[in-house]
Length: 110
Picture 1 (cartoon, rainbow, N blue to C red):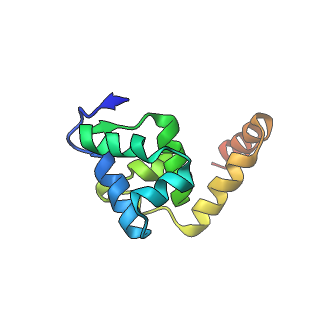
Picture 2 (picture 1 turned 90 degrees about the horizontal axis):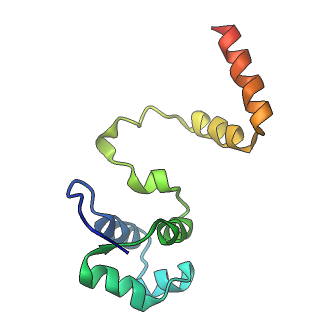
C-alpha cells in the first residue's frame, strides 16, 4: 500500500465520491470488487492509497477507466465528444499494424 503524499488529488475522496454517486457502501464495493472489506477499511483508517491493481478492480465496478478515475473537471477534457469516445474505443481494438496504417492515412490527409 502506498501512503498518501499528493494533496491535490485524494484517491480515497474520489472512491467515496464514486461510491456515493452509485449508492454503494464499502461493503457492497468490497463484494463487487472482490477486495476484502477489511482492506478497504484499512485504506480509510490509515489514509493509504490502494495499489493500482486494486484501483483497477474498483474502476471496473464503476465502469470507468483509471484515466477517468483520475480525471479532474478542470483539466479541459470536456471537448471530447461522444463520437470521439466511440472512435477511441474502436482505436483501442485495433492491432499495432492497423494503428500504424490509420496513423499513416491521417498523416497523408493532413
